[in-house]
Length: 575
Image 1 (tube, rainbow, N blue to C red):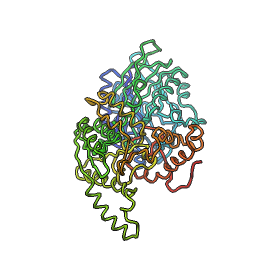
Image 2 (tube, rainbow, N blue to C red):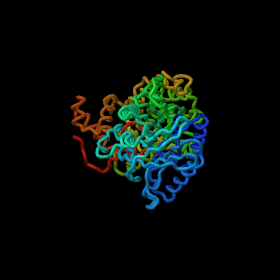
Image 3 (spheres, rainbow, N blue to C red):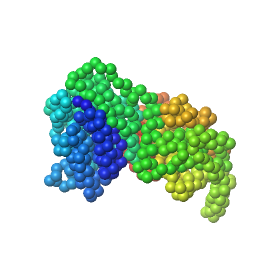
Image 4 (cartoon, rainbow, N blue to C red):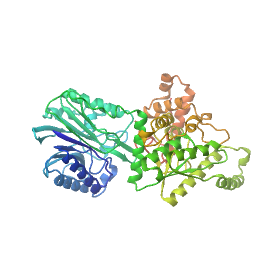
């Protein structure tokens, strides 16, 4: 059976645009002899549509677009694609299912409603959908007879095992087992599974386990592209009943993956798996590049602005932006201040030259002095101690950051370019960032990337520039080698007020991603209790800042975004 798995990048809500592009991919698959063509979960509307599903007319529009797609583009093949549909036409339209539709020769063959609905992390499917209650196996005619194909969707295969939520479905029927009992010899699984570093390897294991346990072929295709804070990586995969690979799709790009599903197992050479052969640093770079490109493209932006400090975070953000939309569409702004070192400016311009982006210099001395003069008078009027007696203090540090943020936003207003913030996860975790200052912007590219990961990405980029699309090493060596500093006070270094990043990032991962207690972190790491407790408290106290930050690109199991819901006004304190 000649099969095409289509790694498709939809724009959420663009029903006409999505189905038009789907039709183009079907035409490509038909030209290559495909007898079965499979698109990802909710391909018609894009995943996740979230509360668009509740808007009047949206569900009806999806159903109409799906009907036209199936009737007009399934001639001579079986076409399977995802779409939200009314759970029952006789019931209210807000009662809906996450469905697959199967069409052939212009007529609907059958439909399948997703049975396991994830409601954890960024997923909220119980809010919108009702679970299906039946196994669906369809016959797919081929040149060598009919093949029995079972329909499933994403979580029906993963069952929360990839994210540590397997207990959620402990009492639910196994959709895969029921498909096999219903006669399926092939399982297809369209997905809308967001990229998380390390999750793809778990997916490979789950797919091969199903194939070997049930003695079936397993074909999985994932959405690709960025939708708001989520990135989808493609990486389609197909396995035979022995768990041997039949085909793999590339990562982070659209593709029509065409291959033959044999009538029985064979000893043909297995293809190389691009996911397992790609280092973590490259996966992170490619995820961030795709997420940045699609966020800009899908929100109608073509240009980006970045404050270039000469530091590692702004360097990586600029490199990602240049790779995402082209260096000619990126503007770097160097904003030296009273405490900026000479190398902050030279490193910023060295970076710009390496990337091929334009860079301008806008000093903050004059606006900062103007703010200082006005505020000194205001503080005196309030009876507070004059600023000059305690300088530099936190107020002055934040004022410098806010002057820079104001400049960037003014340039954004005038040019229409989107400001990309440069703060990393380590800083956002403990509040090493300024509201309405360096947090200004429309997209927080590194908000789910720790400081240690930022340095690892920089070294990978310099060791593998051509793989990232650069002619030479893009990051100045001095930017990597020098101690990190916000340069908001004389001789300031991050480590003056923060523990070493190796320690800090380890505690953040345990406390934020694994939700471990202070006591457990101390017990398992040997770190000083007072230090761990301080970090945990800083993470808790900074929640109000993170609620006001730009959308960030999720690449870890728990990001500071839609999947983490911690109250701001609360008094829980981990012990």
